[in-house]
Length: 270
Image (cartoon, rainbow, N blue to C red):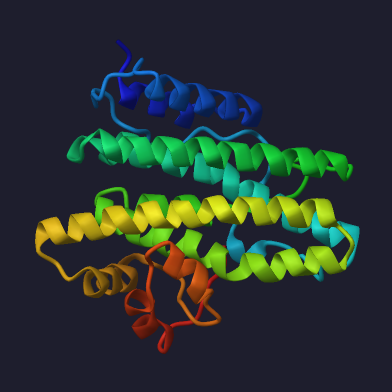
């Protein structure tokens, strides 16, 4: 029987966006159907395979997107979000394949489901870009999300603290305003799609928070205090309001985790 690690590695090593979506769906389906053994016999790659497009630039060289009122700026925003979701596919399967040996099958259940949902989000955004006369890869993107993965590749608690509990949680903060801007611009299709994606992202942050708290309790750490230590140690950006406290709370990420960090750090939005 094929191992879970092998299936996760296959997703990571698939470069073509459409093929990666298909590989992600197949891996999660096979896991649900019991076709994958909870075995970790291969290592995850240091970096996932990437398509030739988009061009990846340092964050400080990314062109400004401007206001969402114009179609051009909305396409730029949707492209940036599509890239985030594309990388998030790899982040989910890397989490399952890299760290799953330290947990029972329920850990894989969560991250394989997250991976399939990130693949769906990318497919939705890619389809919307095509409807607007563009495509994923037409604009440059940056590699900040995978840099966070490299920074936390050695420590599951650091990975959970930085990826779902900082980066994905930030999406909960900014998405409502983004939805409103798309709505005001008359792009209701995009607005509804982003609202749908946000509901899934609350569950993703919840999964990260739940497993972080579980690991902290198992190690005898105070979860909020250790979260703050890890964010200060591994996150290259910074945090400040406004926070979507309601959505964060739904995900179990209460203010005791992040409020103390907000007063001394500035936010870096990916």
